[in-house]
Image (cartoon, rainbow over all chains, first blue to last red; front, side, top):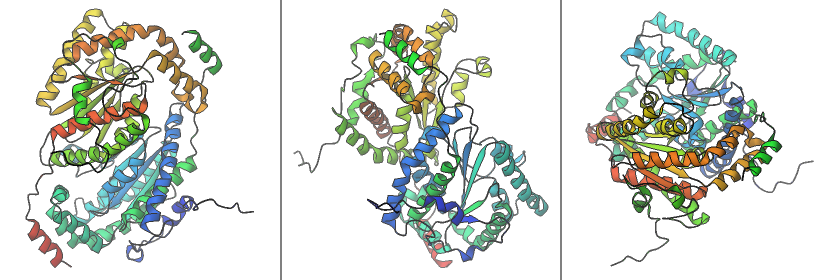
Length: 293
Length: 293
């Protein structure tokens, strides 16, 4: 029998991975996904903010368990990979969603254009160095996917080199999942061409946001269709069972934040990390502590 | 004429550095500081929590300015150094105070016992590697001070080696302040012997906290007076004009959190970082953006 509820039902974060996952091996048509959609969970801003606030203590609690477990040898960790067009909200997601965690257990890395040193190495070299340690939540703001996105659109590498990279990425991610204890949560923040314009205008109209603005971002919009195609290829070829891609509609910031939080929550719950038992006699320690004055 | 206030007065964070600073060159007698004291600011828990919440948007706002300024060449950064006895709340401070910042601009490092590799280098080697970059808030949970604290109490180095370290630390910190653009905020979290017992008992009585408990922490209490003396020596000899030490009474967690937040806020306000102007013509960019469709 259903128990009478005293308040609003919890938002259904457990269903989120299934509903936002891009099925492995299926073609991806980005135009068929509405960036303003709310396919699961809260449907308006007030409900979205409330639902995100509701997940905060759950996220922080599971993070603490994950970290605690690592002190007793549990090698598991989570890696959130954020990708999306300029202004899609990668930085905002870090601020608002990752800000719900204890910062000491988060390892956040933003990947810019490769340095000369990085270019001398295989493209996964700089990525491997920045992976989260056991018990940590890693966050990549951009990632190795840039090497099949901007690299493809701007022809920064030969076509056969880029072609090989999809398989290299899949092998790399499989080894992280299989041998590295890494739960990958790969999120594509899907915004519309119109929303990007609105956000760029917002930056232009507010001098306090000019530091975030690059006139090159405007010229990049000419390449919008190429970027969408490059994303479709990457999402299709690199959404695997070991490391699926999730598509998060991101025109609405409150929905984006809720959805990314929900994805992390569902994955952390599935890991079900446990506080490790102490390897000491608590009663004995208690007596000793009290006897010392 | 005083303006009529519409609400409670803001808590006096600007006065906090002056009032909590340990004056350079003066002997330090820790017993003369009450760890339950509230020498400035809120006097009870409700007021403390409200005051800390009040500082949150100010801290985040100044952090964003500091980061924004760094993108235009401002080399300044802040480094919070947290020291204190076991259970004094270094980790709790990171969670509750640093958690108020945008995590992407924070560089948090916890220093444990040195590794074999670290021991092969001068004691400041591992510290220098982990300094914050321009625009960042760095946080050290323990630091180079361990090399004149536990190293002194446990005789991990020869007396003349430890003796030299105070001057080496002062030179190092002066160079960070003078040439590195680093504003050092060194905080000693001052707890009482009785409060430590209470917190250790709390960990023992809660199986979910056993992972934080080390029976060795009890035996370390025998050395409490030695640690207090080592702290007094370090605080006295390394509170300098370039990098003063602040003593924060830490038996009350809400006061500790407020005071550390207030110290950071006062220092960030004094830095007064500014959003940099854009090096582009905003009107022209606007036209171009709108003309592209």
